[in-house]
Length: 125
Image (cartoon, rainbow, N blue to C red; front, top):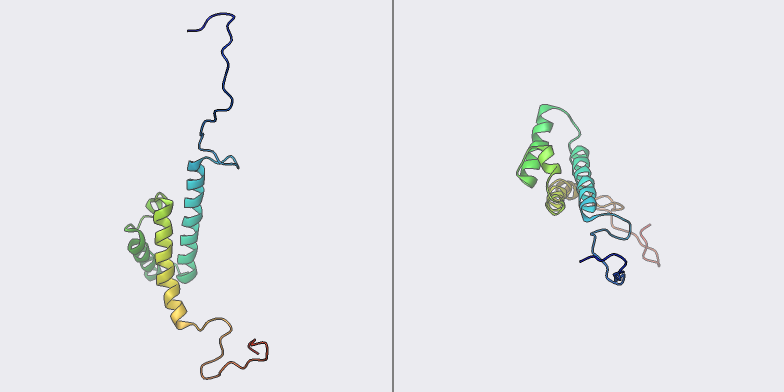
């Protein structure tokens, strides 16, 4: 009970966990920012590999989204957890870039049938 004129000491050594990190971001803000970044990565990946706006292209993008996230709604994708978005992004990269990687030679690879020639430093010339 409070009494007039009586001081109650406050223990300043005890720290409360406010959910805020050193930069002042609350956990929800970090999660929201990560979701936004992942959604942009997903969108960029789809547009990079399927840039067209034709009905066929839109259907292909929608099918890839459904395969990765079990929805064709972009709004629903944006509301997914960052962990789900991360897994979906990995799936899409594997599906889209895996196909391209199989078709394209690695950067710096010689044309088929031409062996690498190396110097004493074992650097391709």
